[in-house]
Image (cartoon, rainbow, N blue to C red; front, side, top):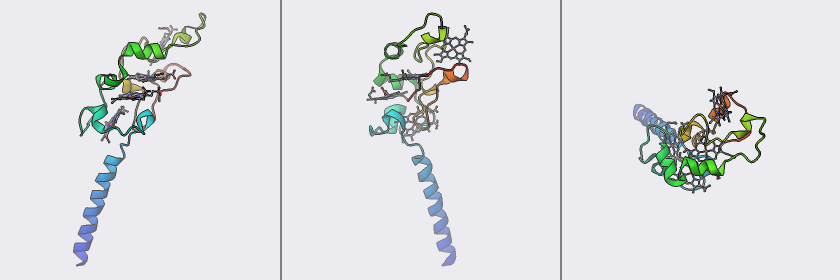
Length: 121
Ligand code: HEC
Ligand code: HEC
Ligand code: HEC
Ligand code: HEC
């Protein structure tokens, strides 16, 4: 009797661990309240890696359109860095997920080398 209860507890613990590992990947950031399914971004119900740019751009059009929206408002001709646009730079069309993270806080990849005041959601 004791052993069965013990085994049952063990199985339950394993189950809970598995369930919470899946739930740990909650959708945060700007899409948090939109009721998205995993496949809305990942194109699969069992994702192994981050979404492709194509998947994000299915809803967000193109890098060109995004660059229009995030054009710098004030440009100081003496300061080359004031031209900085997160969606149009010498880095090229890099992965959206290099900055926009969803399951953890977003982070500006440019920050490895520059200090800009724009922050990705
Ligand atoms: C709004 C879009 C979006 C939705 C919806 C979404 N994800 Fe993600 N997911 C991402 C992004 C962005 C990354 C890349 C994160 C990174 O590279 O740091 C990612 C990465 C992942 C990864 C790769 C491992 C990791 O942690 O980087 C897995 C696995 C994953 N997601 C599972 C899921 C599951 C399961 C769901 C549904 C519950 C889900 N995702 C829903 C955007 C999304
Ligand atoms: C199924 C459609 C869909 C997909 C796929 C999707 N998004 Fe979105 N996203 C939206 C909608 C709708 C909004 C809210 C309206 C808006 O701001 O465009 C939004 C908002 C955002 C915002 C905030 C915009 C703002 O003005 O505050 C960012 C950043 C963003 N998405 C990035 C991404 C990235 C990166 C991916 C891929 C990992 C992605 N989205 C995938 C539909 C989508
Ligand atoms: C180098 C980091 C970086 C990458 C890569 C990046 N973004 Fe962004 N994104 C940002 C930052 C920073 C902002 C906020 C800009 C601001 O506040 O002026 C932003 C804003 C946005 C917005 C809101 C635009 C608006 O003002 O209406 C959307 C939507 C978005 N990104 C989607 C994407 C998608 C989709 C991709 C990939 C095709 C992508 N981003 C790649 C950094 C990045
Ligand atoms: C690995 C380091 C590194 C990263 C990451 C990086 N940069 Fe740069 N960036 C440089 C260097 C080096 C220069 C040249 C500096 C100079 O000309 O004095 C530069 C120059 C620039 C300039 C001024 C000249 C030009 O090409 O317009 C801008 C604007 C700029 N970067 C924007 C960005 C943006 C936006 C990102 C992120 C999407 C980014 N950088 C990511 C290293 C980096």
